[in-house]
Image (cartoon, rainbow over all chains, first blue to last red; front, side, top):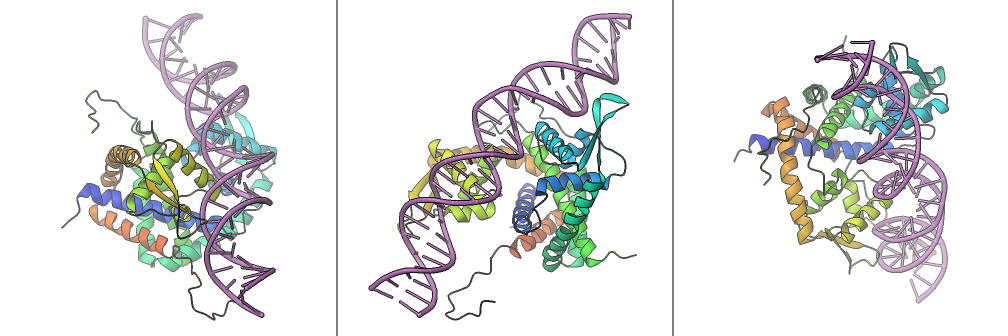
Length: 160
Length: 160
DNA sequence: TCGAAGTTCATGCGTTTGCATCTACCTTAA
DNA sequence: TTAAGGTAGATGCAAACGCATGAACTTCGA
């Protein structure tokens, strides 16, 4: 019996979710998050990937947080001297976010240790081909989501 | 230039994280979470997968929440009549958690709608082979982490 | 048998989050 | 030009979270 395409998609998504949860728990249990929580690290890492300053809403695309939560998280990081928050000269509403030297240093320190744990967990479980497949699949999944389809309410949205 | 195995692992993990965040945002934006938040649904879904009652700490393995947070989330669900919390007769410390009829109904209702969104998002982005690969890879990643090497009942085990 | 150690879940408390809303600014079109 | 509508980010507030710890129970070892 072949699974339907829809069933296959749901099984695959559940598998991704399970793996995500299991690995996140494993990483969170490592003793490297003293000075930076995982979420804070996530923000610093995202900033470190960009060369130029980025906007808050751009940062928000990669981080799984509401806009107000992210706004305040960045505020706290700025208060701690890890992130720089400047007004955007080209858009009076916006911010230009960037890492400070201390922020870059903190990211590198924690990131280095974290990368070791990630490598152990992933490389021990997968072959190189599987890692390449996962990278490719992840990119497709994230990419296909780029144009966010808003929750359109067609009148005839028959709901069960 | 070939990437090191460690680099490959980190790239794959980042890809998984990005896909996870993008899809979670997309799913969260759907107008189906009025009566059940995504986390609440996650708990009800996990319960629905088990036939018998399960323990709180077992539930905790699949859900990305601290033990106290899960304890109180289950409490709220029980107050709303969606989850049944009974003392475990075989272990005075434990609970036996299960869905009530209302809980099962709520899970099915929300789950049905959510599955449609998941199918759209995943099936549109991946081929069937990729979905199968993702399922397999996810299982491997979770599996390598899942069974905490518990000191089985072997009488005298050298413990570090 | 009995105390020490481990496990399971609950609770106190300070912190963080999400929702709704607000302000400030940009964009569009009449 | 200017008013209407849209977008970026901040803020008030209640809900939810994580950490540390506590209470009840089980398991282990002497």
